[in-house]
Amino acid sequence: DRGEDLGVVAARYTAEHFCAERQAPSGRGRGFAYHQQNEAKRILRLATEQELSLLPEKHVEEARVLKVCREKAEHRSLPMKVIDAEYQFDRNKLTFFFEADRRIDFRELVRDLFALYKTRIWLQQVDASFLDEAGGSAAGAAAGAATPPP
Image (cartoon, rainbow, N blue to C red; front, side):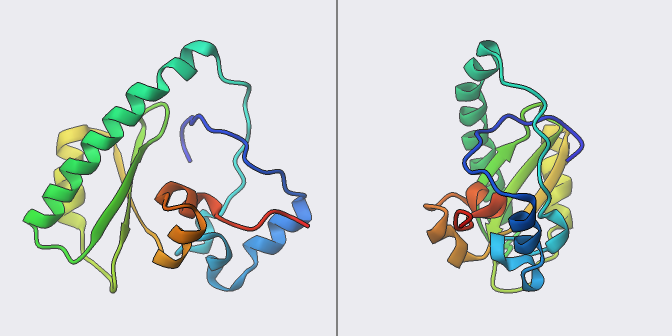
């Protein structure tokens, strides 16, 4: 989505299987709250050793921004549980994954976070039932904790 990311190919799907998963009612078959975000990602190239060496630093930064987001959400008394944070590899987008029982107006929280990090802020609601399938990883649940293709 608008930038470059670094990831691991966890499974291979045929185009037919991927399209069938996308057509699941309300897109929930892959952990998404919204069907439109369930897009296949284009692989540009293999990551370089230098890029791979930056991953631990990225993970440390994600833990730090997660803590800050939790504090800001609590300060604003938002009824949400922020469960994970993920920077896009090129730092053009910062995604926070959260659970909530109802719809939340988090515009002020987004403004707070943008003022701090000066990058695109994205909040992605994750269904708790998909966290179990993804091994507790919100990013995995949102990215598609689906069963492997037949």
